[in-house]
Amino acid sequence: MHIPDGYLSPATAAVMYAASAPFWYRASQKIKTVIAGRLVPRIALFAALAFVIMLFNIPAPGGTTAHAIGSVLAALVVGPWASVLAISVALIIQAFFFGDGGILALGANVFNMAIAMPFAGWFVYRALAGNTSNASRRILAAAIAGYVGANVAALLTGIELGLQAALFRDAAGRALYFPYGIEVAVPAMLLEHLTIAGVVEAFVTGGVLAWILRTNPEMIVESPGASSTVARMPQWAWALIALLVVLTPLGLLTPGSPWGEWGREELANLGLGYIPAGLDQWSNLWRAPIPDYDIPLLENPTIAYIVSALIGAGLVALATFAVLWIVRRVKAQPART
Image (cartoon, rainbow, N blue to C red; front, side, top):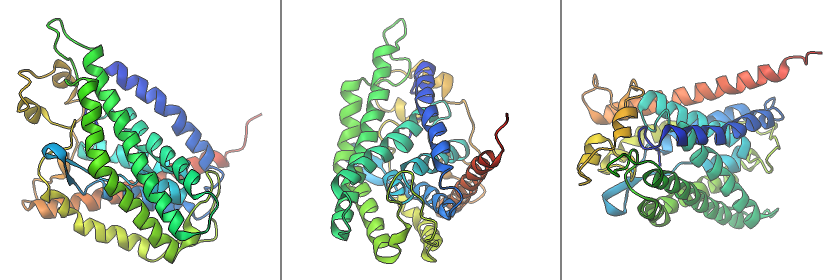
């Protein structure tokens, strides 16, 4: 679901940045009401957790792969507005440091996975769970919310990709950017998420929420602007991240790439007969220092993947703390008259 550079036109990318910007601003404003509590390390935790979760690739229909995201889970625990910032940070680190998702396409990826997905899941959860204290109902509601959120993000991704072939073509009638139309892109994206990725997202969201309800139910933020200032971070929280980092090489067992995230060579093997000009023009916009989570100095790919996961999770956590510190400092500045 991470759209690479070269698959969206600059105009589409600009529109998606413009669509995401108000949510970033609103999230920074909303989070000021809870930033003084113990929610800050919790937001950093779930940003890092989302980053690590996305490293676990699973088989999907058509020989492709998919992965869970963790956006809805973050929204249910720290609130949807905090989730916007947390998942945005994770996606930014992925794009700039690991080349997972494009820089030009970052606005679209953020809108799909850090905005639309958590809010869709949040509203579904609130509609199904209501104000009940029944744990089973809340867990089921969370699982359904994760499933719906993942498919909303997949639908938006399919629409954004599919529109490119209709809107942007060269003189010969060939697509300039993403080569498949909306009639292909939307079904392809939804197929793998309705059948596989959405189900995995449901298990992750419902399973982790069940664990939290059993061990530290006071961690969960019950409304978009609420703050849980009393609950302490449980001792197992960062240990869970460490365990998942060690297990990330399991994501290497699944061959292939997610649908719509092909590199140039993979795209050439799909039988199109041409490479879209926009891909050649924009795909090298940024050279990530650790592309594809591979560290050449570490000849063992398993070790390289673990080290990349460790570096990424650490960077995401630190960047989240930095973003929230900046928000807190801006909040503390006296108003000018």
